[in-house]
Length: 115
Image: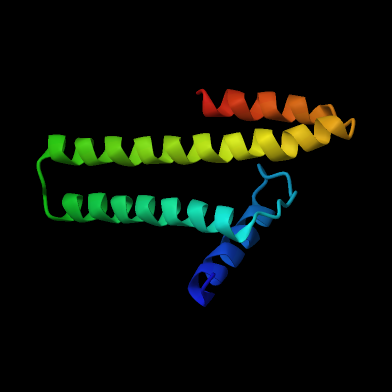
């Protein structure tokens, strides 16, 4: 991970600790997993910046809507990958360790994602 990625991750973690909706828990991810997630987020960030430019340049509405749909799809895909990692890792481990409250937490997260 380069210095810029580390700084961004540190900022995200700092913001997460201040967020009243965050649990305050941390998950150690492999360098490979972290890199894949950050790469997806960078692509989404680029899409959002592109949409911003389109608005600034008065691009036709349907063209912007098409790009917003693509960004939404990319975020949904990111959520699916992260959710799968969470279930396969965190949730499974907690259940094996007798922490069944993690299932309630998972249900709550799924309810938020399905809004």
